Length: 235
Image (cartoon, rainbow, N blue to C red; front, side, top):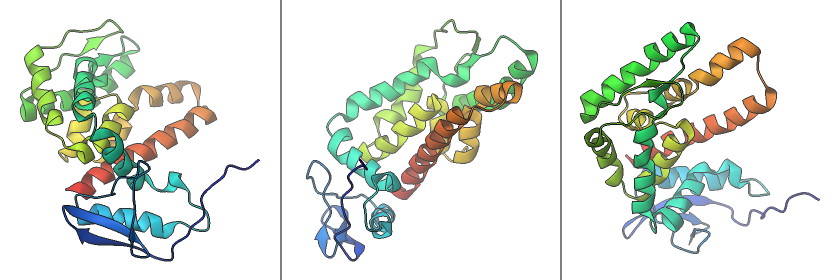
């Protein structure tokens, strides 16, 4: 049995200014979130992107083709209710940041990680006054508490829409520093995704590509790039 999908019921989607922000209209009627809240968006660019997603739907609605709409719904229905908890969860990634956990061998991988990741740790120190220490192997390293607080500060200030995008940048990459570098325009999103996959790409070079793993990686890459685009649409 094929999965049920809602049918398109509107002719035109549009973005318009409203009290407190921007909204998307379907034949003049405002879109609501799955929890029936008003889909009130903080920027014209985001509202136009969401409207474009609705306008691009064909006979059947495909939520997978509507990343900006999904993230906006999440910001309103979920993040607005648990902003502080999510911010603290994301800030905690600093204590186990992917960029700090390096291979012990082989020498070529060790050198590649250092060459690619050390500049980002240097940037975190320059931009945020936060120096994180790398370690080799899987044993955890205790990071300086003051450094972690400095990295956490900008996350705690994020409003729900920004936090919704930032959540995916951190969770998909495993790195708070890398996500901060993306939103600061220190890293292009494509380059950031590549840097987050150094270990995986090394394994592919040695053993070849696994089709199932590669398909999953492409799904995650798309979600990462969608999150970066959502962040840009807010600012």
